Length: 186
Image (cartoon, rainbow, N blue to C red; front, side, top):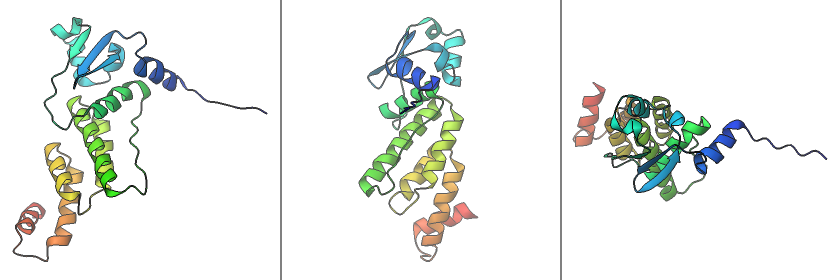
């Protein structure tokens, strides 16, 4: 009997260096949490690259305290983003038959990752989050997802929200929402 188990370099780096903070050379504090990270991995982000190499006082610091002003950035979103520097992937999971209250929590998690990706200028992750959000435009999500699309300049998501609204509310000519949607479509 041969039992094979695969443990890639990325898995090792993620577990030992990111999750356990082994040989960390910088501590990032945000949202009252500390992450023991590595400058070389943080430089995957244009934000951190500029901060750590741009001659700023932070480039010499061993502790960075981030003042994040976007209320949608969450601790979980930051954890996913920082972890992506080590594992070269972003994992956001959803149960196929998820009840609505869990769906809304899932979408909030995606928005938290999106907000952090926007803050740290990670366009590929922003695009990934937008693709996920586009799949969940429904009656109970369209309003908040439209607001997200405007805030983070997600044109594909905005178009899907507007189209969704236009097909459902175009029959109500006196509806203010209908008027706003028609303005967007013209």
